[in-house]
Amino acid sequence: MSLADQNEQVQTEVVVDDSATVPTYSNFCRVTATPEEVIMDFGLNPQPFAQGRQDVKADQRIVLNFYTAKRLLTALGMTVQRHEGTFGSIELDVRRRAGTFQASHQHTQVPHPGSLIGE
Image (cartoon, rainbow, N blue to C red; front, top):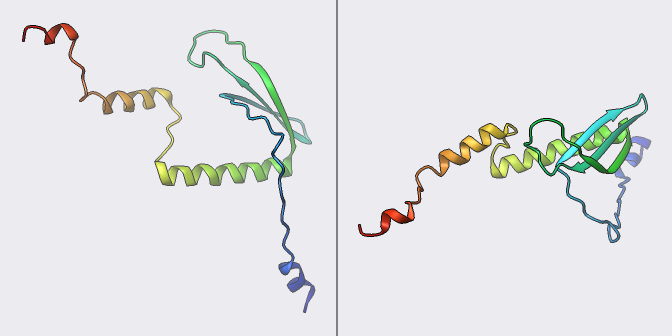
């Protein structure tokens, strides 16, 4: 058996212990970088559609080397692609999402309560 055949047969299994992991919701992420690392700050923006200055407190910071960042990029891309394949395209423009929501609910107009009395 050649060395290449032996390397193909070796499988690595990574078992992750997430029993102490605390889930955190984030609707904000800032990505910065140094020549050696990618830095991602996560936080909660309580008013994401507000005008003017918005102060967001970053609760979590994750620092990755570029190899791990590229693997994360690939994994996120595949995950989003699978989601869109199942549920449809994810629209990032909030104005288009709102327009789609309004258009899909225009046919379900609720009559004004006063218009039902005495008719």
